[in-house]
Image 1 (cartoon, rainbow, N blue to C red):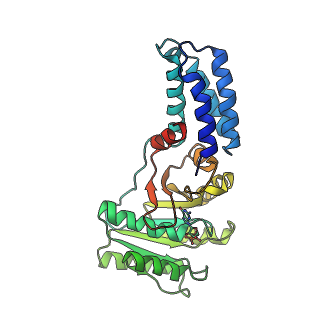
Image 2 (cartoon, rainbow, N blue to C red):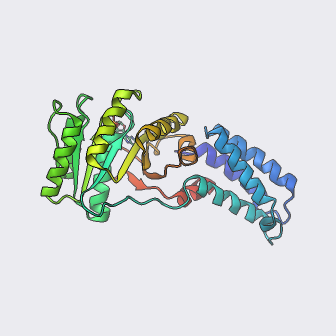
Image 3 (spheres, protein in one colour):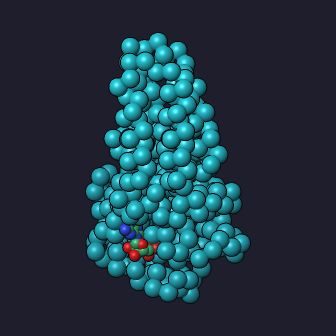
Length: 297
Ligand code: GDP
């Protein structure tokens, strides 16, 4: 289970302070030493850990805690609040274009779960928001990517726009959007190409697809299991393309949690959704406060 080690350690640490009727600065220091180690062991970015510890310490030895009737519980609340802030604060909704269709571009490295997530997102939009999405197969380089998206579309009974692998992704995007307008699709979700590594050619092409399709959202799909690598990938895609959000996949696995806890602070990008399995309904809108409660118990 994701976050298991981190959750155990943080819960143990907070348990020690929770019931205290009097909390001293030394108590807070001791607690923060343990919190710091727990976060570092969960592969959270060290700068993020440093800032987090600083904020929690400041608030915990401040008036709001020491003057309260239940200082132990107040400290726990401070940690919860700050963890929620770290995870993004408010839930982040999907943007909508005033003039349909709303275009969502899905980008990411190969294997991150982009094609699967494209299907899951379409399914989510239809089921939860009553939308009529068109899926677009614009990953013309990975053998079988087009077929995979068609299979996903077939499973969900959702249309997939494809022009095979001999037409450029820019042209595919252009024609897909024209077709979506004609057939009154309110969302167009473009599954773009990924590579094993970020390269200039890939970025150039994604940039062109972005220009032609004027997306309301560009979601980076990243594998939560890759930890800080996921954060580096997000920084790099964001710098070159300008992302609007992140989908963290494979949170059903035993990720230590570093990516989830670092991405917002490092890139300022909200986590919009999390992937919780391989099935088409295993996608959940990301709620920072719920995640924080899950971790802290
Ligand atoms: P792409 O190369 O980025 O398009 O990646 P795919 O969509 O083909 O996904 C790669 C693998 O990851 C597939 O086996 C998916 O079933 C799997 N996958 C995607 N998302 C999740 C997730 O949230 N949880 C789990 N456990 N597996 C996932």
